[in-house]
Image (tube, rainbow, N blue to C red):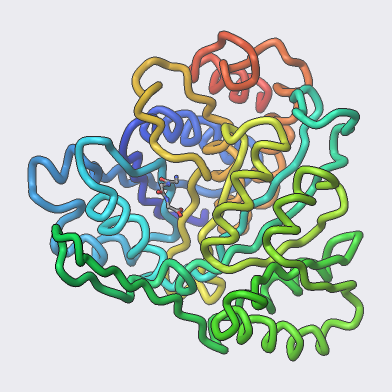
Length: 354
Ligand code: GGG
C-alpha cells in the first residue's frame, strides 16, 4: 500500500480549525476510495511558536519539511506580530524554497451557493487562475533609506525572468489544452510596467505559438478586474503575475459566493520538493476560535492535494461531497448565510463521503 507523508501546518487564527476538518474529510475519502495510507505530521509552526521561540519555524525547519510528499497549510498572520515576520518567514519563503512556482486557484460557482451577481447559474463561472508564485512583485528585493524621518525612501523591485514567466505560462497553457473550452487569458499591465510586464508579454507571445489549439489573448489587469465582475463566465484559464493573481483571485472568490470556498495549490510540478495546499483565505483573527469559519476552502485544497498525490478517486469523492452538501443547503456557515459551525460543516462532508 502506498504511504504518503503529509506535513500539517495549521498556523494562525482559523487555520488550525479549518485544517482539522480538511484532515477528517481527506481520511474519510482515502479510507473508502484508494488503497493508500496517509501519515500526518502535525507541526506547530505559527505566531504562537514565534512568540515562544523567536522564529516561525525551527532552524532546520525546511530540512524537516523537505522529505514530505505534501504540505497541508492553514493560514498565517496575527495582528500582534508584523506580517514581515509571520508571512515573510514562513509562507512566502516556503513557496520559493520549494520552487512551488504554480499557484493554482480554481473558482467555481457551486449549486446552492448564492452568487452576488444577478442571473448566474451553477457551473456558469468556472475558471482556473494560474498565479506565478516565486518572483514578480513579491520578490523581496528592495530597501529603505532614512527610516523614521520625513526623508524616508522605499524601493521595491519587481523581478520578472524569462524562465519564471515561461514556466507559469506553459503550465497554464497545458491546463487550458485539457479543458473543454481551451481558452486562456494572460493578464498584463505592460502599458505601465513596461519592463517587467513587457517581458511577460514577450514570453506570452513566444509560448502561445506552441499552443495554437488554445484560444489565447492578453488583457490589462484593470480591464480583467472589471470583467471578473461584469462577465466572469467568459474566463476559462487565467494566468497572471504574483500580485495580479493574488488580487484577482479574491475577486473570483467573491463572485463565486465566498472566500470560504476558495482553494489553492502551490505546486512544484517537478516533485523535487513538496507542494503545499492551502485555502486562499487568511487567518481571519476576528472570527478565530468561534467555530464560524467555513472549512470548505481547506477541504477543497486537500482535494487538490489528493490529485497531486495521484489519489484521483478520493479527490473526486471529496469534491462531490462538497458539491452535495452545498447543493442540499442544510448546513451553511455564516459566510454562506447560515449559522452552522465549522465542525458541523466538516461533519456534513464526512457524512456525504459515506
Ligand atoms: N492561507 C493563505 C494565507 O495564510 N494567506 C496569508 C497571506 O498574507 N498570504 C500572502 C499571499 O498569499 O499573497
